[in-house]
Length: 387
Ligand code: PMP
Ligand code: GLN
Image (cartoon, rainbow, N blue to C red; front, top):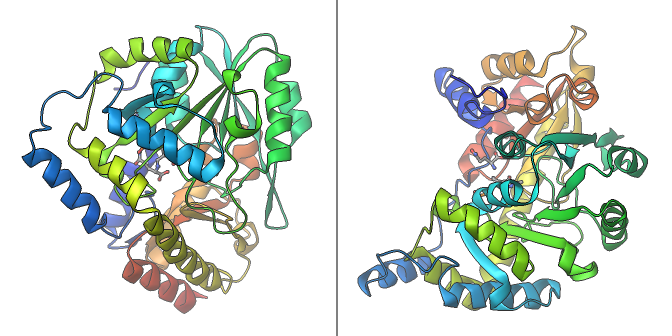
């Protein structure tokens, strides 16, 4: 069964995991870390459980975590925010969905850079809003934002501009000047700027700029989560930062999605944010090395154009030059699963069906390098053997 909107069906990540398993391929599909969560995190959660933090957490989140999130935003990005501005959610996914349901009236447009993380389309469909994608372009291995197309996509009917930086799946990191341009465009149509910063601590080249730190933050709703920062995606501890009116509206929706979640995990994340910034740097170095290994191997495949990501979990490969046959990224990904023994995610699955960007990226496959070191090394070896 799928929803009437057709946007709510099994995620591409689940389907690609099955594809990899059925061919005994290395699964570089879903962006789920192969390395374990650090021991300090597990110890702190266990301690919180033993201390009795096993019932519903307060609806806005455990105070210590709200404080820690605010502190970390000030410390790392110069985003001046107080604990009262923070709402803890079940991952960034709930923060995004609840915000979209709260702030995008039925029939309005949500403008987003394409390709995009798949939950955006589902959240828009649930809200009865329309996703208006603006295609990123890949030019000689580098990813570009088309600001004219962005301006053209905006109208009085735009309720939200949804900006994911650092970006999944391209690794694009917007700088302050670009963020100001996006902010000015959103403001020109009186739209909210909703950010998705879940890869904020995984920038390898350059640095993350928090939109709320460089824009009028009353118009910005910031979303992020701890999953990627601390290799704990299964914990689903996320958050939202916004004005009192926004928080109230989103909290009203959130009450009926999960009410609260992760009571003993929240203090553990608070402790990690305050006490273990060294882990963030270590994780970044580890991932940058895996990125480099995979990129080097992929570059040996004849006709493969590799987009070296400045951030995140993923490398994109355009296989246009690799095969003469009319390319369909789904078929190509299946073929490479059989012939190479490595599975990725076809990038058109992260585009609106039939869009110009889906066409332009018809031969682009996304590979995750956040997997365990052995898996990334095995995938690299298989690509080298295939080349
Ligand atoms: N946004 C982006 C861009 C993502 O890649 C992901 C998940 N990998 C999420 C949001 C979801 O984050 P969470 O697991 O915290 O819900
Ligand atoms: N965010 C992860 C990705 O882009 C997947 C999360 C999920 O499986 N829903 O691969």
